[in-house]
Image 1 (cartoon, rainbow, N blue to C red):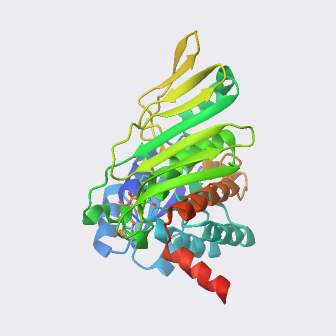
Image 2: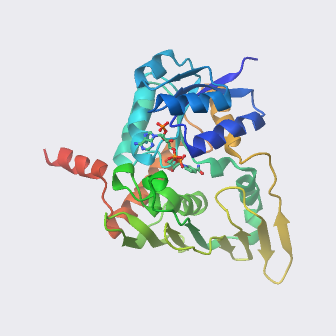
Image 3: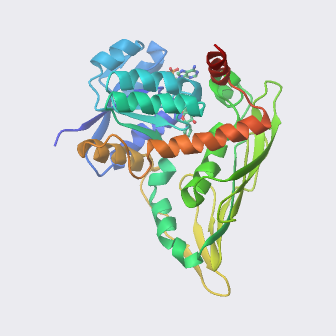
Length: 337
Ligand SMILES: NC(=O)c1ccc[n+]([C@@H]2O[C@H](COP(=O)([O-])OP(=O)(O)OC[C@H]3O[C@@H](n4cnc5c(N)ncnc54)[C@H](OP(=O)(O)O)[C@@H]3O)[C@@H](O)[C@H]2O)c1
């Protein structure tokens, strides 16, 4: 069987992790064969480290000459939409880092472009594909009907050039899109779309959310409390409570958790297994390989519709806390024409 060929756009920190993890993929041998960077020097450096035969700073050379089976987009958030649209228009299957885009209107356009070009699209919500998530889902019946979820995530990002994307509104900065998306994902996975959202945020001078919190209510009268921060060190465990017990996921619960405990009230505590090679980005990569092999345009495990639903929740939170990106303003401009 021939190797599966990945192209990478945005050879930064997570792209490096992705390239390293490909060696653990068991679906098919996978490797990076093309890289697009804004800088010749950076492209060369990354290509040397991962033995990539083709690199360029020209997007049109990349899509036309890259010869890849799929592309992994790992630029800061604000560039996801444009790169994904271009790749989809060239019928290159897309795995795009979270968040898929900056707002629901961009996500809708991506889905439309993928569908009309009959090309695969998936957001890189890699936690959905981790063995720990499968394990949690399979053990849920033991805690009974879910009553509430509490999930927090924080990272005290330094205010320097290297970490600019976290605080820069031009790059889609803010804690919600970077970190809060994981608590939103967890609540969506387990409870679906909320019927009510109440959110508050602490905004920076540039009006991005340094921190934000939200309470979500569901049709079955369950609720969730979620929080994200780029300035406070939160106690970031995630808890899923049920009528008979609860699951406690230890940090980093959106990656490979230190451990996961299943507590049954007045009963046993069981440790759920958390073991795999590498960071775990190869699980989502293998999902893309499987979907393409089966000629699927969408993953049934994490469909593009799920990305849209999650983005709608985040749009509502941003609306309530007052975070507006240029991409939102352009949309308002378009609507008022
Ligand atoms: N799944 C996860 O756990 C996870 C973890 C971290 C990040 N992410 C997501 O992955 C994306 C990238 O995060 P990262 O931490 O890898 O960022 P990063 O280290 O800053 O890398 C992003 C790369 O994108 C390229 N780029 C293209 N346009 C850019 C622009 N206008 N400004 C800055 N860089 C630009 C840069 O490479 P060149 O200079 O070579 O063009 C840069 O190295 C984000 O959307 C983030 O949400 C996901």
